[in-house]
Image (cartoon, rainbow, N blue to C red):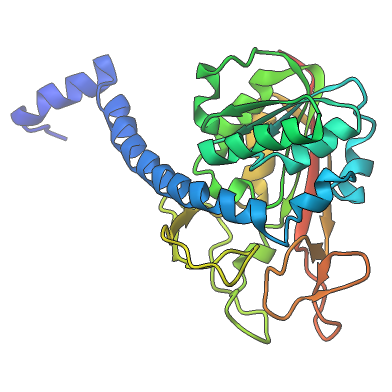
Length: 303
C-alpha cells in the first residue's frame, strides 16, 4: 500500500511518539468530565433533599441503629478495628453505620454538599469519621495513602455513575492493603436492562453491555422523594455488564472470592415490584425470577 505523502508526518508521530493516543484520551476526557460535572450538580441538589427525606429518615438514624442491610453485614463480616473506605458514600449514613459496627471509616463522595452533611451528621451523633470530597478518578490527588485500607466498600446504585470501571478497579487495588478486600452490593446488570416506565411487564429497553456513550435522562424527581421538583434534571449513567465488573477487578490484581445473585433489590427499581417483609423489593409471583441484585467480594493478594 502506498501512503500519501501528506500522511507521512502523521504516521511518524503515531508510531514514533504515540502522539494521537494521548490527544484522543484528552478529548474523551473532556466529554467524560462534562458528564460528571452535570451529574455532580444534580447530586449537590439531591444531597439536601435526601438528608431531609422520609426515605433516609436521618432523625431516626441519629437515635441509633444501622442503615446497611443484614445481607451486607453478613457477607462483609466482622469490621471491628478495620480501616474501611466507602466509595460514593453520599451523606455518610452507611459509612457511619459501619463505624457503629466498629470500623475506622473514611467516606468519599464527589458532592461537596453531601460531604458537608456527612461531617455534620458525624458531629451530631458523636461518631468519629473522615469524609473527603473527591471524584473517584481524582482520589490519587487526595490525602489518602496507598495500601492503607482493610476494606473498600460500595453499594446500591454506585457504579451506574462511573464511565470507566478499569480505572475504578485500579484505585480500589491502590488503596487496599495486601490481604484486604473489596465488597460491592449493587443492582444486577440484568435487572438494569428493563423498562422502568412499563407498568406491568419486563420489557428490555436499556443496554446490557457497556457503551462509551452514556445513557441520558431528564428526571425532575428523586427515588427518595417523588414529589421533589429538581432544578438540575439532567443525568448521565453507564451500563456495566457482569463480565466488565468482574474482569476489571481481576485485571487490577484482585482475586474474586464470590459473586452472589439475588432476585430482589433495595429500592423500587420497576413500578410493579412488591416490597416484602424482608424489606427488599421483589418481582410479583407471576414472573420467573431474574437477578436484580448482585454482591461481590474480591481480595488483594499481591501488590
